[in-house]
Image 1 (cartoon, rainbow, N blue to C red):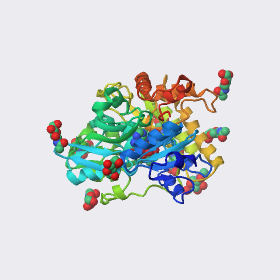
Image 2: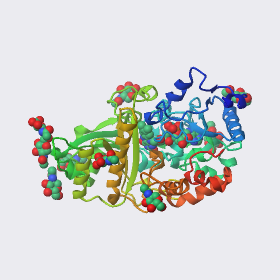
Image 3: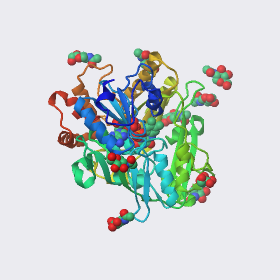
Image 4: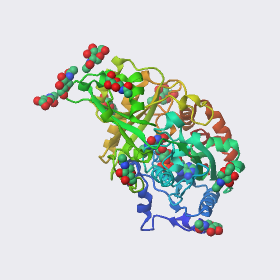
Length: 475
Ligand SMILES: Cc1cc2nc3c(=O)[nH]c(=O)nc-3n(C[C@H](O)[C@H](O)[C@H](O)COP(=O)(O)OP(=O)(O)OC[C@H]3O[C@@H](n4cnc5c(N)ncnc54)[C@H](O)[C@@H]3O)c2cc1C
Ligand SMILES: *[C@@H]1O[C@H](CO)[C@@H](O)[C@H](O)[C@H]1NC(C)=O
Ligand SMILES: *[C@@H]1O[C@H](CO)[C@@H](O)[C@H](O)[C@H]1NC(C)=O
Ligand SMILES: *[C@@H]1O[C@H](CO)[C@@H](O)[C@H](O)[C@H]1NC(C)=O
Ligand SMILES: *[C@@H]1O[C@H](CO)[C@@H](O)[C@H](O)[C@H]1NC(C)=O
Ligand SMILES: *[C@@H]1O[C@H](CO)[C@@H](O)[C@H](O)[C@H]1NC(C)=O
Ligand SMILES: *[C@@H]1O[C@H](CO)[C@@H](O)[C@H](O)[C@H]1NC(C)=O
Ligand SMILES: *[C@@H]1O[C@H](CO)[C@@H](O)[C@H](O)[C@H]1NC(C)=O
Ligand SMILES: *[C@@H]1O[C@H](CO)[C@@H](O)[C@H](O)[C@H]1NC(C)=O
Ligand SMILES: *[C@@H]1O[C@H](CO)[C@@H](O)[C@H](O)[C@H]1NC(C)=O
């Protein structure tokens, strides 16, 4: 391979002739759709163990016109951190996994390869009075998660991860290392929700820890059609199959406070005291990930990497008007019919409505009632299964169009869906597709992102798709 010749100065390079190549490649390929034998393979994988490896990789790739795919936690929903349709190398950031908590200043430096579980765990080693607003899955990496927004159960109180990032270290397209001050406010703005890989390689983030109560109250209550789920979110059952609705909640306070709030604002749920558990915030991070109460918090750092063969497709929507009850019924009916689609509805409000849409590249703020995440997953291998399930997820997504945002139909970058820019099947040019993506993910912020991109990593006009796609450094 040319790569290990031209990048000979670098250590930690793995190519197809190394026995460990596939092992290293697949350790962090979370979505099995992109780790099949037929999936495109990188020319090489550089495992970054030092900043100089990152710099060297960037310079080497630039010199030789090879694309870099940057990988931290490997949870990209479309595998974009480890596949590409042009020749590429993977820059693996997993060794950059430290979390340094400064409890006096209520901040922490989090390296991009650190997982969310490790972040939460390290905070808890210092204090039970602080937490951080980020996602639910402990194995997601800070590198991709924060640069795509970082959406989780503390957001109504404290916003997204990006709303609590105060500094960052980044290697730019010329191999230079920057902090917030030297990168400037435009670039620092862009990497907080605009997708990191468009702008540089993020080495670490400085975050502001947020206050939590010594104990939080959590509940998970299930309602099905027969138990009045329909009146909480009304439904029908055409067969013996049913739709189950689970309400998962966390309250920064004790049961009494939660009960009295819900008695006023959400009596339909019928929450009772015995549904509630008061646990430390750190334990709640496991509860949200479905571990039973009492699980040791070490699970956050030892959690299994995921099912062996897990193929999935995610999509997202923003809902601005209540969905009529009759429509809910027809949605449940379709869920029963297609079987594989699961939805997560994440309510807005609070801090999410207070932050202006241009504050960060993440534009989906006030005006939204809730965000929907769609998840279709399967375990069967092969092109046929792929097509069947991708068709189901697309079919469901199209069905939901009347109930969600339109012009543009907004979408969340972290639930990346490479089909939203295009008709299906598509015959648009890549530029058209890329422009369409950009508007859905970033709304009015797209223009500023394109401006920053053209400043920090200029591309030629013939390659505008990379500019609008805002997805990988253009080498
Ligand atoms: C099981 C699961 C649960 C999830 N839960 C949530 C959730 O609760 N909330 C939420 O907001 N999202 C969630 N996501 C989405 C997740 O946040 C995004 O997929 C995120 O981008 C993953 O980050 P990563 O570092 O693990 O992924 P990677 O695949 O490593 O990277 C994702 C993207 O970021 C880029 N990137 C990675 N590291 C760097 C870096 N150091 N510098 C520059 N660019 C970089 C990659 O090139 C790629 O484009 C979930 C995804 C999965 C699969
Ligand atoms: C990283 O590389 C630099 C420059 O070669 C060196 O000074 C430093 O000690 C290295 N750091 C680690 C942790 O290896
Ligand atoms: C804490 O913050 C103060 C004020 O910003 C700063 O002077 C000090 O150096 C910080 N302490 C550490 C350990 O970073
Ligand atoms: C759902 O609501 C409709 C009208 O609102 C009602 O006619 C129907 O009986 C309800 N179904 C269930 C299962 O409660
Ligand atoms: C529904 O369940 C009942 C009892 O469990 C069973 O007898 C019946 O065959 C089922 N009907 C269908 C359509 O599956
Ligand atoms: C739905 O199915 C259940 C059995 O699973 C049955 O008990 C119930 O009466 C059905 N409800 C309606 C509205 O058809
Ligand atoms: C909530 O309402 C229930 C039923 O009306 C009542 O038993 C309970 O005391 C109320 N709890 C609070 C905290 O107001
Ligand atoms: C919380 O985590 C601790 C530490 O692992 C564990 O000992 C304890 O049982 C957990 N408590 C609850 C209520 O889950
Ligand atoms: C796609 O899925 C829908 C819903 O299950 C189905 O009606 C349709 O026939 C499928 N189309 C293809 C091409 O498989
Ligand atoms: C492909 O492009 C042509 C011309 O723009 C258009 O008429 C046609 O509908 C498109 N087909 C699809 C599947 O988008």
